[in-house]
Length: 330
Figure 1 (cartoon, one colour):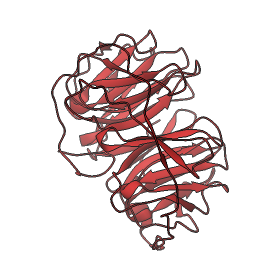
Figure 2 (cartoon, rainbow, N blue to C red; figure 1 turned 30 degrees about the vertical axis):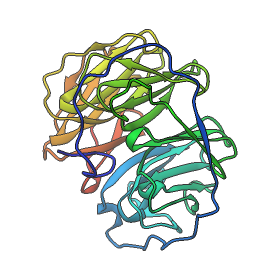
Figure 3 (cartoon, rainbow, N blue to C red; figure 1 turned 90 degrees about the vertical axis):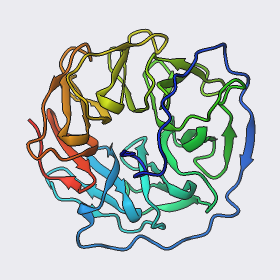
Figure 4 (cartoon, rainbow, N blue to C red; figure 1 turned 45 degrees about the horizontal axis):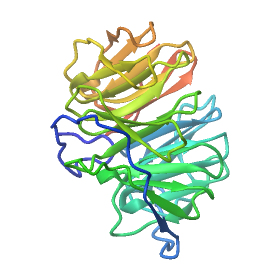
């Protein structure tokens, strides 16, 4: 089985999640950065663009991709090649990256690593790391000060000072049998924040993360990524070609029929409003009707993809276990 954000750290659980009443108030545990030390910096590699990429984001017009061995890759408009960032203070596998503008961003990874940059990804500093910490798989920031990171076993941390200190949020219900892995935090224009998670669960908060509601979508597998479309529709994708859609802010969900067995690992909305999802075995599916239906467009080499980003309007760049894939679908 392939685990898109951390490369086989654990097996998935597939029992159904059960929706119940509201979560109790979140428990908070303070975590400071007193134990953070500058580790081994990522080395410059001539074939860095071939390293496994697990996350990518647009920082203005620049693409920033993260992956194995602390590799962070940058590509600017007019230059389809990717180059390594100047300084990355870790060799840990990096799993996700998020920018709030063209300069300020954060990346997360194994051993609870959290990095930050203020110059568009050229240079990074270490905010958090610990050998005993769970892998972090996702990062989301509302502004330069407040954000969340999440990962294995329902690990969810919040910062209100840009990542200098962190508070642990407990989103596990008392009647939960397992602590669900959290794979992707994402948000919509209405202020709601979502987390695509294990066991067919999507967490939703309407009060800035003070309380999270676990919604049972009716699916038993894991959701690995999600997106809120410009019309407010919420899409999550995951194992075995699963695509689920909600038009009521995540309260109820319906499965979108698509002739696909390969797992989907990432989903975005393009500038032309089409929805694009990619995954294993060359899977590329695209929707022109806000996710109501999808058309399968397989990659000719049937490579496996972990992430996708739009290059220019209607053109996208693919990423996977073999790094940057030099093939764009138009």
